[in-house]
Amino acid sequence: MDANTMTGRVKYGVIGAMTEEVEMLKKDMSITKTEELYGLTFYEGMLVGRNAVLVYSGIGKVNAAVTTSLLIDRFGCNSVIFTGVAGSLHNDIGIMDVVISEAVVQADFDLQALGYELGRLAEFDTRDISADKALVACAKKAAEKVISARNIYTGLIATSDRFVSDEELKASLSETFGALCTEMEGAAIGQTAARAGVPFVIIRTISDNASEKSAGQFDDFMGMAARHSEEIILNMLSDLQ
Image 1 (spheres, rainbow, N blue to C red):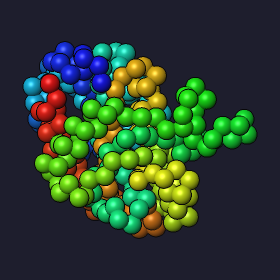
Image 2 (cartoon, rainbow, N blue to C red):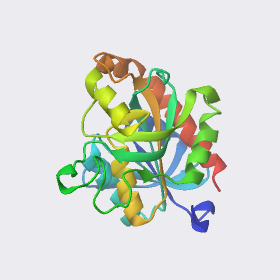
Image 3 (cartoon, rainbow, N blue to C red):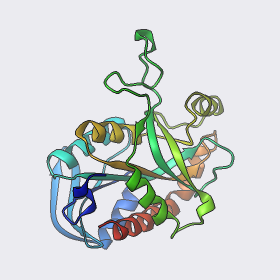
Image 4 (cartoon, rainbow, N blue to C red):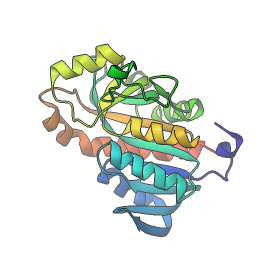
């Protein structure tokens, strides 16, 4: 993370994957400006004393990339934090556990016919896109104030434009990439931020086990996951300078 990011001059772009968590964070925010762009509503102001822009991105990689681009280019955000839910890819990572991205991968991006590894973007030197280490450490510390440290994991997050509710696909994502969880936005945010030279981190609360029961589990635990996300973001921003 550069020196600018560790000072009060930083403006944090906070992206929520769920309307519930954005609505919760709005209540914590001193909003000075609201702007509509590309069908998205951006709330600019102060969040626990930090300059921030809050937005609900919508589901999927295109929505995530557009939102991240606007935060960086239009609003001048020089740090991006994303929160939402995910499906676990491991039996030991349970519902309401938290996964923080050490890196992200585009699990459904396939240029193998051109000689690239599955998930590898042509313009990147490696398959996995690394998150900012300082933001990862801060997110982990913030999450430890909300849940037990033994329920917090850091590692690779797999992104695809598909809600995973299939055991075969779940096993494939785990075996092929070694990812801890699967979701639909993180790697698009990582790709966009990395190309702009902006630090990022993805924080995911596990809402389901990426199986045939996932849709029901997602509905059951989404509200609780949103509350966890709110608390983690507030703790994290409070710790950042």
